[in-house]
Image (tube, rainbow, N blue to C red; front, side, top):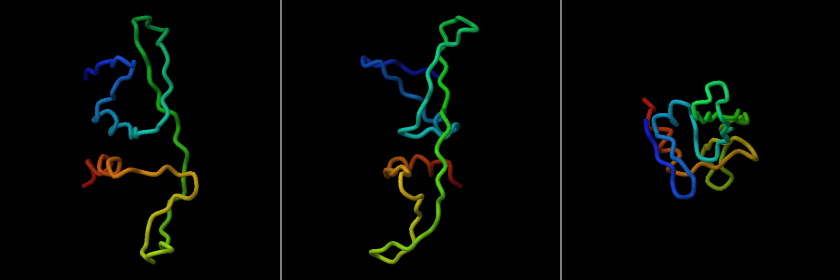
Length: 89
């Protein structure tokens, strides 16, 4: 798959690659140059994600059951949820 470098030096990782590796917005990637081949290869390595304890609790306002991952867990946008559900059966 090809991608293009923007004028700001940014690249877009194609959706199929992000989904296969579970990469989401805000995830940390380590960028390095592959010195073994010396063929101008850039290596992106996904950094380990923090583990959160996900559980079901009652919403204090509505009383409905909701999922929580506790304080410090990332907040997901509707777009991120939709992207995660693309491969859901």
